[in-house]
Structures are given as C-alpha cells and as structure tokens.
Length: 207
Picture 1 (cartoon, rainbow, N blue to C red):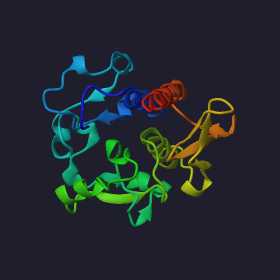
Picture 2 (cartoon, one colour):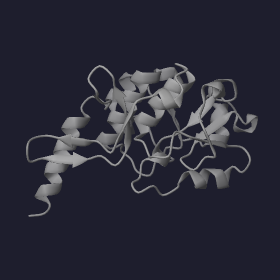
Picture 3 (spheres, rainbow, N blue to C red):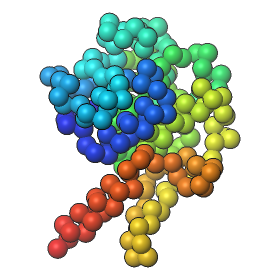
Picture 4 (cartoon, rainbow, N blue to C red):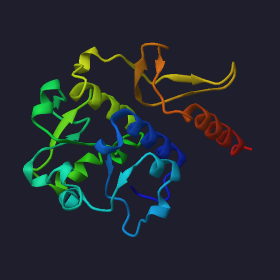
C-alpha cells in the first residue's frame, strides 16, 4: 500500500473481502514500515483483519499458514498471465496474491514489479482479460478455488453504469460479478453512497 491511512474506498473493499472469504483467509501485507494498529480503520479491526508490514518473502515468519514463498505455492493474479485460474489450481497453490497491484486505471502492470522482484517464485494466472476491483478479484478467485465454479460459468458485467438519478451517473472502469438475485453488480456495502459523494465532490471541483 502506497499511503496510510487507508482510504474509505479501500476500507470498504477490504471489509467486503473479509465478509466473503473469512478473516482467517485474508492477510494485508507490505504495509508501510511504522504502521501501527492505530492506523488501521476500527471497523476492519473489529472484523479481525490480519495485517503486517512484512513482504511476501518473510510472511511465513509470523503467518506460517500463508506459506513460504520458496515453496512456490503463491499464485499471482495477473491480467497478463498466460493461463486462467482454474478449479484444479486449488491443488497447486495455497495463496493468491492480489490487491493494490490491481487498483489503478489504466493498469500500470504493477504485477511485473513483483515478478521481477521474485523471479521464478510467483506463478501468474489470469482472471479473464479485464481489470477487476480488488474485492471482485478476491471474490472471483474464491468462486473458482473454494466454490469450484469455473471462470466461464461466473456471470459478469463490464464497465457498469451506476445511475444516481436521471441526470447523474458514472461508469465504473472495471469488471464486476453479477448478483443473480438482483441482477446488479456486487459492490461492498456503502460503496454506492461513497461513489455518489466522490462524484459530487468532483463536480464541485469544477466550479
């Protein structure tokens, strides 16, 4: 993570990820040196968020369940990976790496920085060819590996238009999973309200 404290946007995404996969299956690593518990949003701490300033190659020292990078059991979710993440990969990898490396639009290929830093230790796998929000990528990997739903059977919506009124709408530059009950993109609780606030602030900045 480049900056602290965490933005509202990031906080909502991490909260949704904990709700989706469980607090024991999510670890936010590589936080800036000097980060303390006081820097972590209270709502994430209440949900049991695991976090550390450790990098990938030293995670196992404090979090052995997340494996040693030398074991080559870490799968880097990379839009430029050569093959798709598959249901069978649950037998090949213990950890999926995702997060801030996915968050820029347009993409900056920050996954390349990790591949260059740990050559031969990270295997890149795709989740399709379009960028996802961080929580969507987490949810997609969860569907494929834990629920054993093949990627091609997951229903997506690309670049959805989020409409607040007849005159107010924004287009999200990401791919989202569809909630089959509502037929709408799955978003973290509170995200629509935050989008509306950010949109209003952007309009105000024009005047």
